[in-house]
Image 1: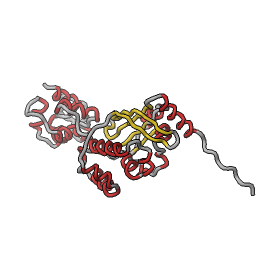
Image 2: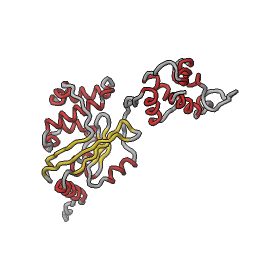
Image 3: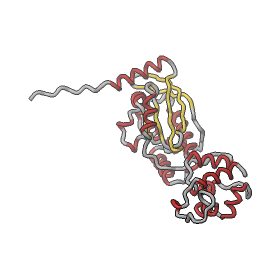
Image 4: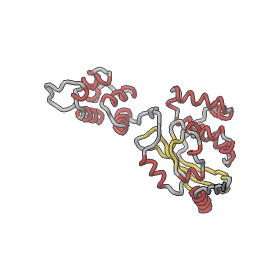
Length: 281
């Protein structure tokens, strides 16, 4: 039996037939029968049996997704199923993102002097730390619909002004965004977002039509902060484990001078705002 067959057999043995609406009468082994998995996955029982036995050729991605749902696999188990069944991870599934867990927010907050944020597949910013608010943008002051990297870069003059090389940054973010949504361009959420960006920004439309695509997992960012001057930071991006719809980006000051500027901005941001004295009547 192949690795794929052993994995499928093990996972169906862990499921409770009664909980899934199947009779438990006359069962010699625990879990679901092969024909019951096939029924839940909407595939032929004979074909599924061959799959466990290592016969019948490689399954399609669609069939593996249906089997993953039938066996109630976790995201990690689904990825493992694809790797042993097709030799690659599954395509990133599109999902609506509401926010991050408190645990992930604590990870961001622990990076006291490194601006860090988390964005979705549409590059909506859903979490950030104090350093990001001080150095990049205080996203809490923006309406949720405007907390989007592309909207900031292409529609807000203040965000454009601080970029050291705005045209390069614009090309960079569009090519990276295209790579992120490459497998979901036909979905309404993505199509509507792209159409809206093309409507409101001729610069975005021109770059989008150029069809450039690239992954940008690390690099260097320079900004002209209105209070601290030029700040150079290295950045690295990471997929969030168990949340393929999220990406975390961490910026680190390149030199000690850059670090000092970052620390000064964070300190200034942390100071309580003075309230004007109340007038005596």
